[in-house]
Length: 442
Image (cartoon, rainbow, N blue to C red; front, side, top):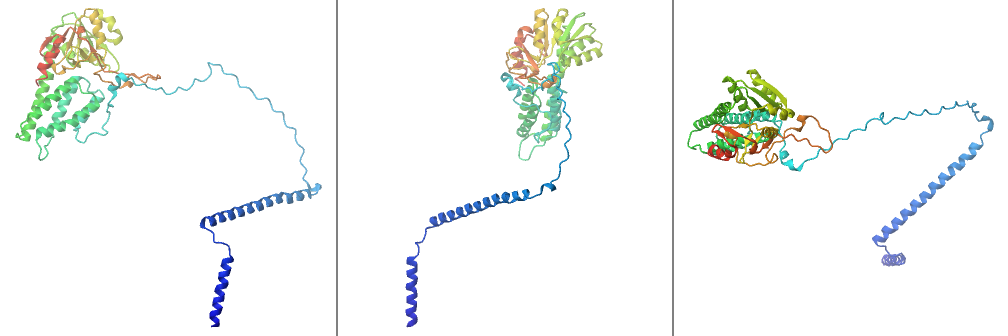
């Protein structure tokens, strides 16, 4: 009983103590209180640190003063310092002696009117080549890109021979027909050649002929027989539309060359060179003036071939074309293409020479195969052209200057006297009819 009374008394005392204690703080108030205590401790530490720093120099000062004067080391007598000579002034440079300012790298401007000619970069290697491109097509593409194979007819012939090797190595996948799959396989080959150089008109006509030939192959024909048939047709196209055509054109154009004539040619054309050689073989004696131009110097190759055959040749630069025209009796041109409005598209510089000839009443004959005839119409040299490497002329460093190396120009039909093709001698205005007859029916 006594224990129970003591326990009750202790509980009552505890309740009395809690009631007299301070009220309990909230978490926010506790946080604020701890923050204030922390700041107070920092301030106290700072005051103590400052008091120690002030007392340290005060203790050191009397120690220094207590050193007796006799023990101070005596300084040696100072030597007189030599007088410094006045600095020499550098001689003033004259304006002529001043170094030239460093040349800033020139900025190349992009002429908007020719921007479409640079839409696709020129390929010079085999990087990112489609896996289905045949090695023969790759070789031809690189030769075209480096202008090793340059002429329109040469590129067309090389393309067809490369496609023939593709057909010989072709195997039809299981479950597919040869006409459909082989036509699809030609796509990467054509795109690769396009990336090396733009497709010429003769190449375009040959591609259309080949695709039409493949599509019309009987699906029931055996693969070996179908491949032989396609290869034979490719050989027939090369023979009839290039070899026989060039022979017929050269025979007709050679008849226009008489004894004692002076014939002017520009750059290089295989059919024009063949015409001159055939006229020389027939016993006629004439003089040839070759106009050469940069950067390809194709006229030099023409002159070498004619000279080796015994033809009398004189070479002149392009700037001399106007001055020698008074001695010329006939002008022979090759062609990249004959357009639908009768205009001639050929190596750049042809138009100016044709105008010189027209001014001197000298006849201008264009030797052109019908496979190069086109239904396109061009009034200038901008719409259909090819931009070659501008560095062929050297490194031109001029601010805001863009070197434009165009490959072709357009000669209006009034400056062309006659077009000689395998179908005969026709006026330029007859080209659209010849194109429909020779190309649209193939």
